[in-house]
Figure (tube, rainbow, N blue to C red):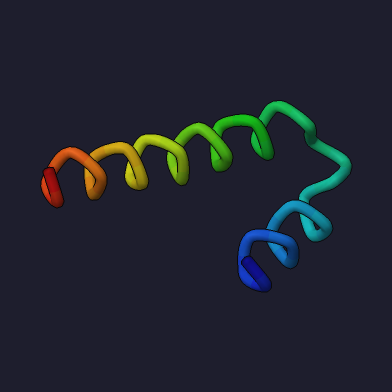
Length: 37
């Protein structure tokens, strides 16, 4: 979480890039969840 917060605060000037990064994180988490199942 600390790394994500640092990234969002670092690129706060560009909300679009923040949204893309968030989407990547969510996608990776979903992949891990599917693998665990």
